[in-house]
Image 1: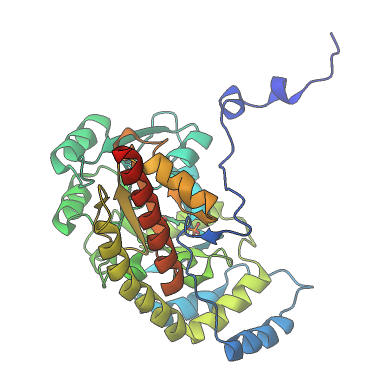
Image 2: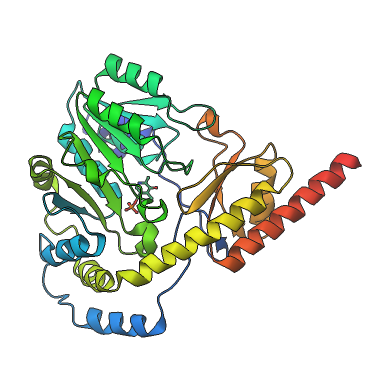
Length: 367
Ligand SMILES: *Cc1c(COP(=O)(O)O)cnc(C)c1O
């Protein structure tokens, strides 16, 4: 009877049934799968950053409130002074914090599908019921279905990614405001791709909607390695979330590097502009391929649909180019691939390789 307990006995069965979030090994690949900024810092900035990091007090715990980071953020991104800020070790951590804060037996979390997978995944970790409202076949927000689902399920929390990942588009601002008015709970507008969206943001709406908070990250702006996300909103929300934040969640090196980078934010913003400029010829090149449908992007990636998605993905892999395969997930994404906008030469390479692939498809079809 005194059998030693095993993980099987102890770990929640629903956790045992999950599989871990898979990140493919990309070593040696042209990496266009994860919306990273492909540009490195100029040499002189690398050296200045190194000097700054060398002075960081690794022997001490970090500033628990990371006040210098918040001040730098406010200045660099002109955040409204009236709003409070909470920082996360990536915005993924903030998604977790918000979900923990609303966790109760009857709470429902709502998202649009397809969207960022973490909303649903972390809801499951917290045993929260997640309701996904499908987008239309062309990945637009179905406002009638969404309002009806809000009425039926009374979600405590709604996630909206603006622009949306993995589809790349911006939903109608009027639809988002209609959701804010109808929502019986908190609405998190996730602006991870804000630097590429031509100024589109809901931040200006924060004073008008007491149930809105805006989430952002520096990951897509060129600092994915730092792990720094933030949530801005009324202190009434932020102070509650702050109670759940682990005390030293932003480490000393991340704080020092973030403060430095915010002093030089123009470099990052210029890189983002360059990525936006590169997006246009990449989209045009993809649209010129046979049987490829390209969806309009306001982000640093492009979603495409082609009946040859699986084979195209495999062909790119053979050629050491990694993009994101979406055809195994949401049924609306059957035949879909997501390509991060890379450097000019990376974009040229992915286009040339896909051109090759479609030429092969055409020749086998003739044969
Ligand atoms: C990439 C991404 C994030 C995650 O950002 P991190 O700060 O790197 O955790 C959040 N939301 C969306 C929509 C994303 O695409």
